[in-house]
Each structure stands twice: as C-alpha cells, then as structure tokens.
Length: 294
Image (tube, rainbow, N blue to C red; front, top):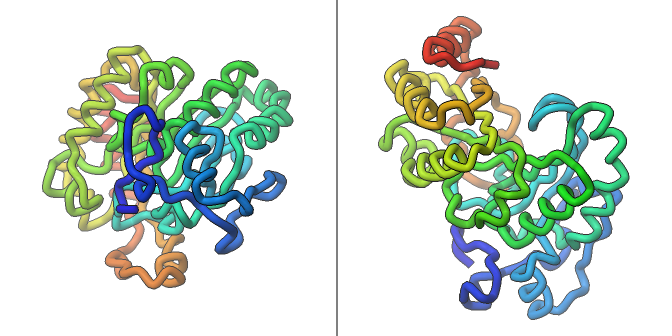
C-alpha cells in the first residue's frame, strides 16, 4: 500500500494491495470502550473496509470547544496522504497502524453521548490522519450520526476532497478545513503535496452552503510570512458566507516524542512556537478581510 491509497468502495475498482487493513493492536491507541476486531481474515477485512462497515481507528476522545462547537466525540482515523512537517499525530500516517473497528460499534458508542451532545450543542467530529482516506467508513458514520440527530463535522485538509461524495456531504454540518499555506511553494514544502485540491474542495463546500471553519497553522519561519498569510486569507474569501470563523493555530512541539518513537525525521525540532505578537498580527490580517478570528 502506498502513502496515498484510500479505502474506496469495490465498485470504484482497485487492487487488494491498495486496501491494506489494520490487523491487530500495535500500540495503545486510546479506543477504550470500543470493541476492536483483530481476528478477521485479511480478505474479509478488505471487503468490509471497502463497504464501510469496518474502519481503521487510531483513537477517540471527548473534547469541548476544540474540534467544533460544544462537547464533541472526536474520532481519529488512520491514514493520510500528506506529510506535514508539523504534524502532531504522525502515528496516524499509515492506515495499517490503526485498530479495526466496526462502524456499528462506533455508532453505538456515539449514541450513548446523545444527551451530552444535545445539552452542549455539540456532536461528533471525524479527524485523522485524513478522514477522506476512508470515505466509505466515514460516510457510514456520518449518515448514522445524522439519523440520530447528532451534529456532524469532518476535519480535513481537503486534499482528498474528490473522495467525498455528494451523498456524504449531505450528512456533514460543518467542515474544519485546513488551509496550510497560501502559495504553492510553501504548501509543497509543508505537506509534500499540491494546494489546488484544497481550494477546489472549499469551492465545492461553499457552492453547497456547507459551513466552514478555516484553519491555519502558524509556524515561525515556515508559514508566517505576511504575504503567505494574505494569500491564505484571499483563498478563504472565495468561500464567502460559508466561512463562519477562521482559526489561527500556533505551532507547538507536542508531537516531537511521537516522531522520535516512530524513528521519523522531524525537521522542525529547532522551531519555536510563535510569540504572542506574531499570533496577534497574523489574526489581524484575517480580521482585515472581515473574518471572525479565533
């Protein structure tokens, strides 16, 4: 399996080696309370991941006012096509490193928290990794949550926006869309990929009137150039009233230990978090474009 292979329905084609599924627990991943399946035959795992009844999960947690409004159950899926230099979850890069979890089991867990979601005006957020690496599984979870009256959100780079079908998006209330840079060169340096798919996905969301919270990670010496920030703001402007807020997320070093544990080269080891003055001046640029900024 390559870094960019996704789990897609069998009707869209693909080879077995493109659908490498998680086999067993490799490390503590924080899926407490959710039954994992580690005794399935490989062929069955592949088939079930294609139809969305089985997913590869890193962890889940209950958070408040972090990954969307209210108290939320955030589920981190394994697999990502990007290799962001500042990623604080590099242990979600590979789909095979996750835990095999049934969609129905995850939905049963979500159902238990409906009253909490209702009282706090919260819901569920599918994050990663990259949620759109597993579109069939994500689509099943989103549809199931919506049928229970639960607010739904996905946190995505938009790079695999083509994997989000119109049917899936009908069950999405909010998208946390990460715009990692405003110019191609910096975007490529940060992620190893191209910027255009993110812009195209944002355009599609805006055309459908789906609410967007745009996110931008501020890294001194990498993404903090005012011209780059202006370019990000102009991209977000394309999406008009669909954008209800912009979040400027200061870089931190909280993922360093994970990179070391995985024996991956961490190129931002010497980078420092942005000073408060830089954070505020960056937020001011977005405010000058009329955005509500956090």
